[in-house]
Image (cartoon, rainbow, N blue to C red; front, side, top):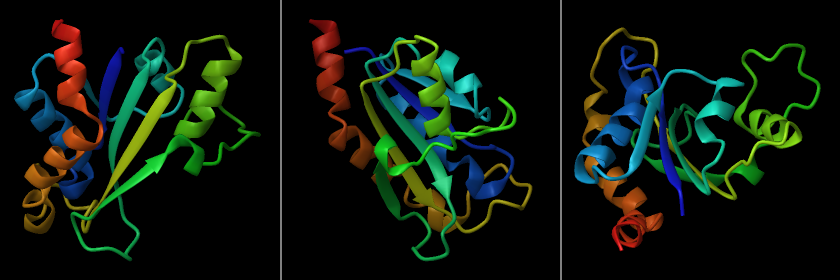
Length: 158
């Protein structure tokens, strides 16, 4: 199963870079996994994800409801595509998937989205806040276990 780990964020905006930091840590611990870190969004996603069977997206979220570092798991079905978009720039993930499918791209059959509750996504700083940073090792472990990433690696090696 061709799997892609896709970490989103802006690495110079404090907690906004948490998706990238988690993806980097997953890659450090599992060097044979395909991992991409990006600040891009919208239509550019099609080029990254097309041709993969499984996609694991990691990004930040600021709901104000949860504790910093709390992890939420979503599926693509939890996101509603914005059908009538005026431009191909800045479209959301669900719309990018629908567009990719309608253009004939082989889009991932399995998609998991992990969103990490953050505190600060406006301060220019290359590190996450202490609360979020302290949760990264736990989040990495949880994603690797939930997505059976080690099993995927062992199947790849066989």
